[in-house]
Length: 469
Image 1 (cartoon, rainbow, N blue to C red):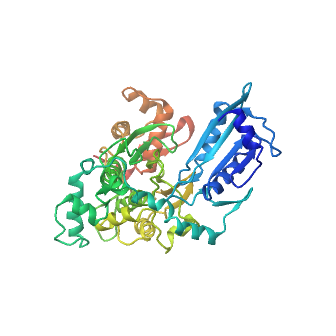
Image 2: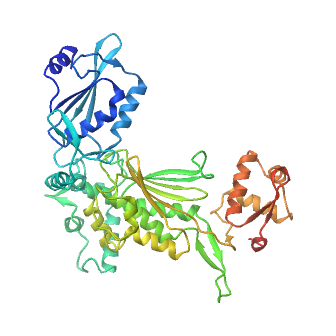
């Protein structure tokens, strides 16, 4: 597109498919307009043109493009919007944002709201119109999993995982015993093929790591402390959904502590994980089932901090649903019913719409605070909080860092130690601040007590753990 093309189009005036914005200072209004165009017949927004049709342009710096990219991330599903830069004079340019509707996708929302375009005016889409649109378009992003995988072949799937799913489904009573071992027949039964071709759901569930579906990914992080400043462990895994679930559970086993407590009426100590294992598994399963797979850069993320654990997944809640509703009985509206159906047959979910309630029940039963649910920046999250116990024992195996175990070993030999003494006796000691974070974690877990304040503070093992092995 040239300057002459811009002037010719601008001369037509604003319409249902054309909008002018003076500068990127009006990006929020531009986002609403683009959303309305996507939910209609498409169109374009020209940034650098006044309401009266004067082509003034603007300087487009890297920060300008970053703002545009941030605006595009506020669409759900991922917006098919193309950005074009058209030089006009000197260092000034026109940004042309092309909204290109995609059959089978939509309706689109921008910052959690749906918009419509009527003539040259953009307005919030009424709920009744949204529901009609949703049904007419085949339930929006739900259709993505049913689309044919452009390069998916049966050899690209993990056949052993498919057969394992059948075996577990038969054991759970959710597949007939005569299901058989023919991979094509199994895929048709689930259903993960159409006319002999794989759909996207097949690749999400059983695909081997491949560049064709980079969104089949889970990010796993154990942070040192309560912020994201320092990592203890950080990894990213790619593969089918069941493989990713197993990787998450392995990560939990590696990094979560085992707490021990004494129950009235029992002599032996009862060892329990810091968080209920089944609640964590349910959270990851929910994330894999309900997330949006449209964005190739999306992923499920697990973050473990000293004071909490979070699971994030790409995509917002269904239109109109609020995070607080997830802790109560609510209607199930799975984003990916085909994927959810295979998880059900494998025995990993019980009934749709109860997963989040089960998470809450498991945490309460374990004596933990109720987990929190929310959505932010195009993602849904669940946050777990550890419980508070008065007598806690942590096994000193690989669930603590090597340095934290070394600190405990040092403290066994002394009645009390100051931070500077601990640091002096450690091999290759880190900063005092890092050791202080280690001691705070050990204190929170009930292994260590701090006495005094400031420079006079000393640390000692708790009475319950003075014989820790």
